[in-house]
Length: 485
Length: 95
Image 1 (cartoon, one colour):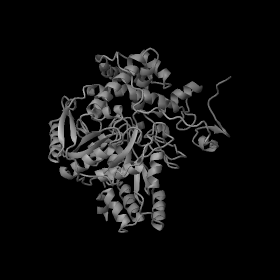
Image 2 (spheres, rainbow over the protein chains, first blue to last red):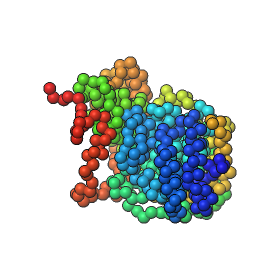
Image 3 (tube, chains in turn orange, cyan):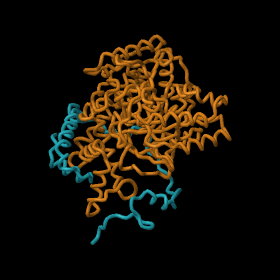
Image 4 (tube, rainbow over the protein chains, first blue to last red):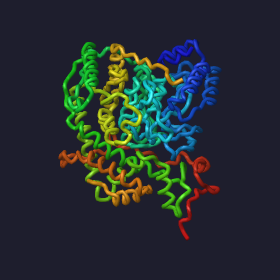
């Protein structure tokens, strides 16, 4: 029976639909596994009683026509869940119990999914290794002492360790795609506005997007279908018809034009990444796609732009944590201002404070034009790079990350080297485009690496199709050996 | 741009985050290296570029000016670290 958790989400859904297994049995399997896997520290909160109850309820009155019938799953602890602690990986929200539900999680419960628990992440989603979480490092199941990436590190780790059949994360600069690449799983960041941001703890509002993290491309299409949809509570939600991504999934990519941007070959990039990229190009070529060399000249300015825009928005968004309305409050301070200052100093971790300070500075009087306005202009140029090339190509193929998973502590003391992790993922967020990371191979240490497909605005179906065709022909097996329980 | 201890003091005041003087040095060092990284942007001429304020092609929707929720005082107060009946409580502001 433990073999069951090895299966993809789509296979598990079929087992439920064919009545080969009940939701309650399935839920129990995951509960047992999660209980034995505390070493990975992937879960911050578990909701076993709730999950058991809901699974029994499903079995009594099953609706097999829903997308996720009776499927237990865990979500990143950045999604507000009604009645269940939502911490954002921060001391500030250690005891915060929302009394409302995020739209995206509401959507998946409506499709039959059941909440198993809340997954660890970098504090307020600020980080690329899950080391900034107040609740401790998450371990990547591929090897001891290795980071799962971040910020959706708990989600990636839980998925790769079979502690949830699928999950959802959020991606502001690579927080879905980078951990997916580090754990040999699939992660998709949708077009900005496709999934509602309502009820997600805000980091940088013009960049944040929720998206699926799964074991296969087909699973990814099922999850995206369940999550996406117009929401009037999010003013940037796109009004459009729901799409049947899973039904429309196909492997024929003959004649598609795939752009290969020369700027994504960066200095000191391990040879293996280049080889993997070539492998990807060859697979797509053999499937009948045409490869076209393109140039995205402002790529190298994406990270510096991001480190102005994202902290600026974060400093505004995180101004709400004042120790008054909800969250942590310091007991120190003789007046209101000191209470604010101590609350924020004690409640936030170092990386979050660093980014709030950067953001405050770039927005402060006398510096706004030099930093923030400049960054908004460069962001325009980065977006134009993509716009111009999407006239010529249907999608763009790049590596997902400049390296495979690294050791815990290896980059923790050097913010810039940590930020460079997101060099291939950040441009996509700045331009609001959809992109998917698909596992493509292993490096010489045996650690997984992913390739990224970037699509046009709202062209999720096409990048899913290319990824689907790629996956079928890539011969990638992520055999994670259980060393932790 | 180099960030020194005085600047840290100024920004942390604006951000309402007290910074331990022991941590101030390492923070100044980190921020200096981050700003050096950010300032690569000065290599690009952006004189005739419109700043990007939204990546959506459509303007933000406005809704009808009609109340469609409310009466959730209990819910809002529930997570407050300190409250008194229907009020949030803060340290004394007026003597």
